Image (tube, rainbow, N blue to C red; front, side, top):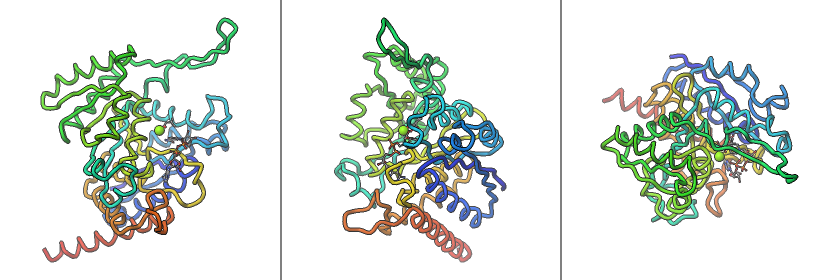
Length: 370
Ligand SMILES: NC(=O)C1=CN([C@@H]2O[C@H](COP(=O)(O)OP(=O)(O)OC[C@H]3O[C@@H](n4cnc5c(N)ncnc54)[C@H](O)[C@@H]3O)[C@@H](O)[C@H]2O)C=CC1
Ligand SMILES: CC(C)CC(=O)C(=O)O
Ligand SMILES: [Mg+2]
């Protein structure tokens, strides 16, 4: 089966972890007899440098003409002083809007093999298994006006948190549908004690809940949710929340696994290609050092195989290879324990590829004798 994948490496470690994911996709293609046509495009700072804009039209066209999009990360100090409308991050926001990627699905999975890496005690994180569903095309990151002004002679600034009810409905419904396939619980996170937008969000969650009598709904204020995530993460199944709260809480949730380099994501739309990306950014502090953890990106590719291509067996094969490599003790710097010698980004991807090829070879031999 031929699939066309738009690869947008972006900036910083985005480039390095993208190479890791492509290595794994090539191995999957070889093993399972698929054809993945990887077509490359520029986004973020890389696109600003070459074309003067963070999301050139040709990149967007390339994505629209593909079956799925795999994106590394954007941003970095080089472009931090650019005016707001041509910052690298604007390219990411624009592609999300243009592709209608309304729900960003961020699974947080506990790996017993690296439990010691989390600063949280093992008995707190053990067995944590949750998904943050983050609204992705509305809220503060998109609302207008968003500008500096002068009011009564004083420098002033405004950002706007704007939502339409249907934008809340679709992402909350997605969270309920997901919870119905998991542990049957949705925690809707808001700031309804202060914000009018949150009161509408809460009402909408109550309305959608009526469509899912077997799914339990609870509400939680965002400040409490930030604390509960660390205190008792096992209480959560699916957490659904607006754009900025979800951005912040999912980075926090990565601490349950031990590193930001472990968390993948999928962004879904009503129609058109889905986009897959790690939740982390371009990590300028380690960019170019071949030190980034490629697992978040590789697990994002596994999500793509499952969600965009219906390749469940292939996705599981990649996820199992990741587990196996972690169990073998191999670690990039972010998940290394004191005294151990970390592997590079490239080595980690190669080890995952080797585990994938080995497992499938064994599986095929066993199958032949079954
Ligand atoms: N989706 C995207 O493209 C995102 C882009 N950004 C951009 O990235 C730049 C840096 O932002 P930061 O706040 O530093 O966030 P960041 O996520 O890039 O890095 C935060 C910390 O996590 C570490 N880290 C991140 N990914 C890692 C990986 N794969 N392996 C090992 N360690 C990893 C970094 O070294 C750093 O210490 C900014 O320009 C920001 O706007 C930030 C978040 C998301
Ligand atoms: C860089 C931002 C636009 C978004 C962000 O931090 C994220 O999507 O995780
Ligand atoms: Mg973020």
